Image (tube, rainbow, N blue to C red; front, top):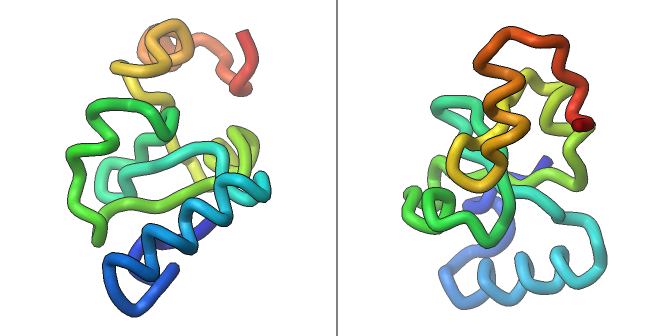
Length: 92
C-alpha cells in the first residue's frame, strides 16, 4: 500500500512517481482511507478525493486484506455482493 502524499515531496514529483508505479505494476487500484473504499484508478469518485486521503494498492487481495470494501461507482457488481452481505472474496 502506498499513501499518495508519501510518493513525493511536491505535486509534480508525486505525479511522476505514481505514474511510474502504475506502469511498473506496483499500483493497480486506488483507495479512500477515511471510508476504507477501494476502486479503479479511472473512477471519477476516486479522482475527486483529496490526496491526503488517497492510497494505492498493488491488487485487490491487498485491499481486502486491509478490510477495504469495493466502490459502488466503479465496481458495482462487487459492491452489490458486499452490500448484500454475501461472502465476498474479491472475485465474481
